[in-house]
Image 1 (cartoon, rainbow, N blue to C red):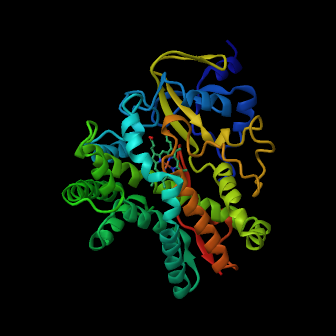
Image 2 (image 1 turned 90 degrees about the horizontal axis):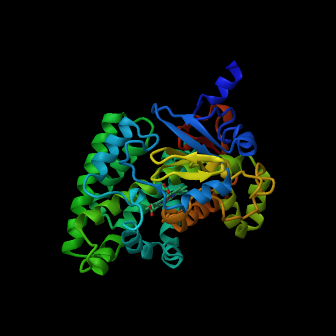
Image 3 (image 1 turned 120 degrees about the vertical axis):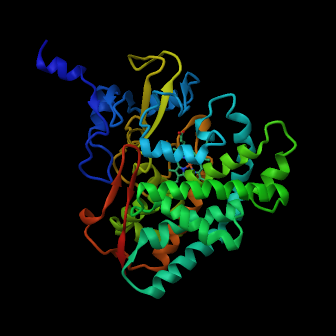
Length: 407
Ligand code: HEM
C-alpha cells in the first residue's frame, strides 16, 4: 500500500490547525468541498466523525438516532477536568443538554416560558443598567482597561443573578465563584472548589424559593410546576446550573470576538453610529462569522448513512458549527463579514431540540453591549496589536483571555 493511501486512511488529528485565529480553521472550506465527513482523532484519544457541511450538520441535529448523552463512554471530547467539574456540578440532576427525547421535552417546556422574546424585552432596562454601570466604572478609572474582566464577564454574571433571583447579600459570593470558574488565572483546584460552592449555593437557593417563591425565574418555576408530575427539587437545581453554565463563557466570548471584529472594521462602527438600528443585523453577523462555539459533539445510537459514509452505532460525532456558518451552499460569500446580512439561520446557537434556550437573551445582551460601548466610548481601540491578544482556543470554543483596550 502506498504512503499516500495510508495517509488517507489515518484519521486526521483534530482540532484542525488554525493559522489566523479568530478565523475558523482554513481547511474547513476544502473539507466541505472534498471530504465533508471524515474520521478524526481527538486529543482525548478517541476517534470520531467530523462533519463540516451546513446541510449534514442540521440533518444530524434533528436525527433521533443521534444522542446528546454525555455519560456515553464514547461521547467525544470528554476531558478529565471538565468531567470532574461536570460531575460536581450536575451530580443531582442530569443536565438538560444531555437529555434525549422524550425525557428532554417536559423540562425544556418548563424553562422555555421564561425565555420568550417578550420576557427578554422586559429585561432590556436591567441589562442596559448593568452595561452603563460597568462603562461608568471603566471611564472613571481611565484607560487602559481589560474589556474581559471589566465588562464581558460582568454582564452574564450579573444577569444570571437577576434571572435566578440571587439575594443581594449573596451576590458578591455568587459572582466571585462564577468568575473563578471563568477567569483564565484560576487553577483547576480553584475551579473545582468554585463549582462545588456554586452547586451547594444553588441547592440552597432552590430550597429557599420552594419555601417562599419570589418573582424571578426560579420562584415562578416553583409556583407553576411544583404540583406537576415532572417537578423535583433536583430538576430545578439542574436547571439553575444549566442556565449558569450555558450563558456564561459563550456570552463572554461573543462580546470579546464581536468587539475585536468591530474594532477591525471602523467603517461598520461609523455606520452603526449613524444607523443604530443596524445593530440587530450586525450582532447576527458577529454570531455567524466568529467560531464562538466552533464544534458541538454527539454520539450515534444507531447506524446512520449520511454523505456517503456510515456512522456506526456508538461512534462519536463532531459537528463543525464554525464550518457550517461559512458554507457557501447556504451563505453567499460566507467568508465575508457583511454587517447588514442579518441572516438568523446560522448554527451558532445549535439546531434541533437543544437549540440554545438563551438565544433571545444573548442577542439582546450583545446588542446593548456593542451599541452602548461604541456610543459612549467612540474612540475605543485595542491597546495592543491584534497578534498580541491572548486568544483562548480549545477544541470546541474560541475566546480571549484578556482584551486590553484604551480610548
Ligand atoms: C452568545 C451566547 C451563546 C451561545 C453562542 C450559545 C450557544 C448554545 C448552543 C450551541 C447550544 C446547544 C448545545 C448542544 O446542542 O449541545 C446551547 C444550549 C443552551 N443554552 Fe446557550 N448560548 C449562548 C447564550 C446562552 C444564554 C445567555 C443562556 C441562558 C442564560 C443559555 C442557555 C442555554 C441552555 C439552557 C441550553 C440547553 C438547551 C437544551 O438542551 O434544551 N445560552 N447554547
